[in-house]
Length: 170
Image 1 (cartoon, one colour):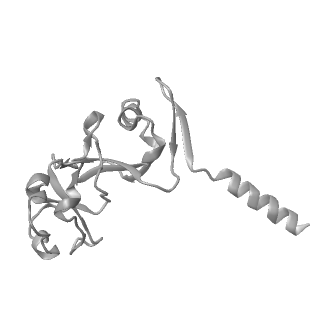
Image 2 (cartoon, helix red, strand yellow):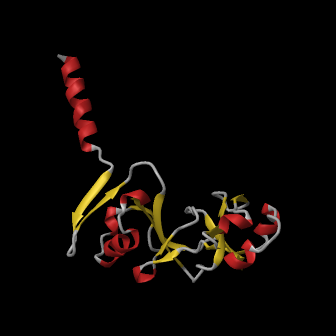
Image 3 (cartoon, rainbow, N blue to C red):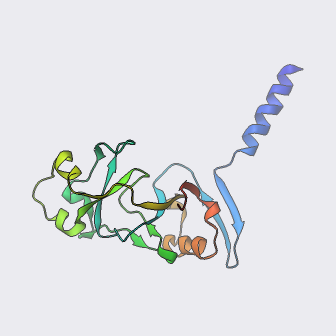
């Protein structure tokens, strides 16, 4: 009998777990899929850093743990700036995280460098080591047929609860 109880309990737990969230908005039903894959990270910053190079700091902000090479900032021959969304949100196109910092050098300037600077040299160029106001993971980017319009719909209709909050407004 105890095996049956354990089996029923286990099935109930797995049935309650989901990788998607659904909600009906004024415009349409939106479903956010959190299966593995490239993440749709949207965020807001204290100031406009959309042209500045992002780097990732250690959790104690004492060192840079990840930074791009100059060629990493170019996509199809153009700078891979974040995409502007509604209400001041940006869609990340570089792979930032909650530990992002922005440098005092632009994408264009950085992508024109002949060599990749050292982490120490880049650390000295940090413009803001705590730039984020909000950050959300809105699921797998591949789920969206029209990514920009669908994310804008989530934002416009105040449905950010569909996304996973990484940092909330301070």
